[in-house]
Structure formats: structure tokens, C-alpha cells
Amino acid sequence: MAVQVVSLAALYLSGNYYVVKELGDMLNGTISETIPLAWFFWLWTIALPFIYITYGVRQRSLLLMRTGLFLIAAAVFTFRNYYHVMPIELALTAAGALLVGVSWFLVKFLNNPKGGFTSKQLSENGKDGELNLESLVVSETFSRVGAQTPTGNVFGGGKFGGGGSSS
Image (cartoon, rainbow, N blue to C red; front, side, top):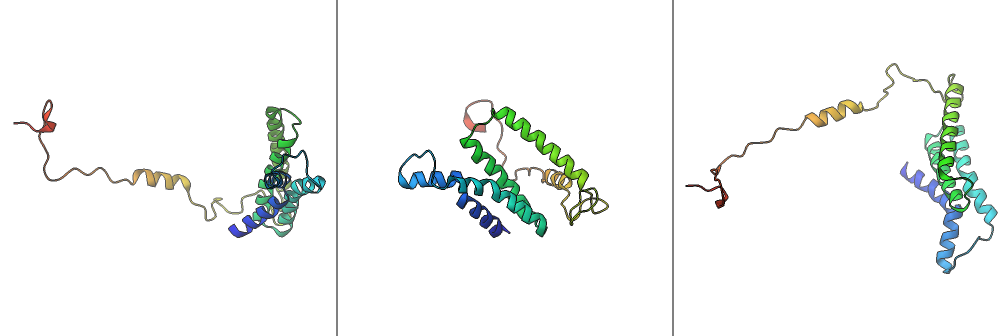
């Protein structure tokens, strides 16, 4: 699974506009405004994450869908690096509202299973093979053995200087 994720990310990064432009500038020792075939690299940067998601839905591959979602964020950051359409606060607010709306639509749309996907829990308790995180934290917190009392010579007190040695 790790090899697949690394391979998918490497394929995306090989055509990402930011990576191609910055590596080209670094290798040539220049600072360029744009690169040759910029339209191709912009298309690659924007379209490939959506291709991953579409192919993931068709193949029912959660790995492809999650990788595509992560790469959409990379595409947005790449676009934002070169074009400032609106202030960042407004952009984040609009993106959050859009994500909430899309999530709501998908939950409503997937109430009935479609193509192997559903928003409903498939088991009675909803914990198919998951660790109960709360019980794990509680058991780790309270499983500590109490502090051991020192054995052997216990030196006497002392009220000043002398490091605990008295009479």
C-alpha cells in the first residue's frame, strides 16, 4: 500500500506545475516567469487528482480516492502560490462551506447504497475491527505501577550543609 501511495504521488509530482517550474529554475540557475508547455502542466496539476478520484470510485479503491483528495489540496496550494484570486480568509471560508455542502449532499445521496458505497453503518455497533480508543487510553493511563520505595541505606536528615549527614 505504501508503494502504491508513493507511486501515485510521484506520478502527480512529476507533472505538478510548481515542482516542474521550481526544479527547472534550480537546475538552470534562473528565475523564470513561466515554463514551456505551461498549459500542459497546469492541466496535469488540476486534472490528475480528479482522475484518481474517478478511477478510485469505479474500482472501489479507497486508497485512490484518499490520494486524490490529498492531491486536490496540493493542486489548490499550487494554484494559490501563483494566483491570488481572493484573500486567504475568504478562500478558506468558501472552501469550508463548499466542503460542508458536498459532505451533506453525499450523505443524503448515499443513504441508499450506490455502486458499493453507502453512508450508513454496516454493523450493529459500528466498530468493525476498530480499536476502542477510549479504553486503550484509559488502560495505558492507569496501568502504571506505583513508584517503588528505595531499599538499602536511607540516609538521615540534616538541617543545613553536610548533605544529609548528621551526628
